[in-house]
Image (tube, rainbow, N blue to C red; front, top):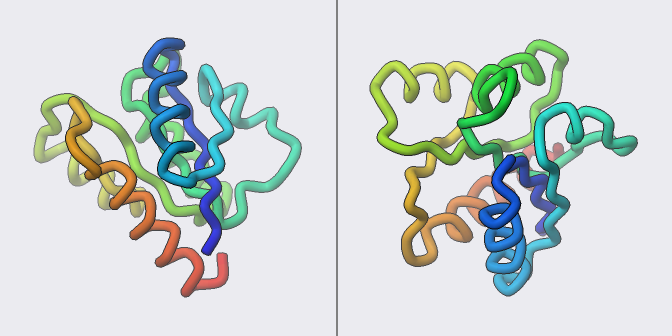
Length: 125
């Protein structure tokens, strides 16, 4: 199974902590400070799992993901949020994304990423 995660988080301490924790869980993490940096990545996303922080400069995580979906990107995606609303959940559903609430507890994030990546493998993304 592919274990590639493309992490977008503007907070350098959070980004470093998440990268470290996910790498300990066996994921291959490529991190970015914002969505523009991810967009400038030369390789296609393929079956890598997108892990986006909802709070970003410019477009938020779900807005950016919606733009990717309109461009035909079908990579699995999770969006990290604080206090998700029903409206936010509806936006995530429309973008075929899963929300994960901060603070991230236990092994919820690695478990979600494994589930998303396994689904992508079955779909041959």
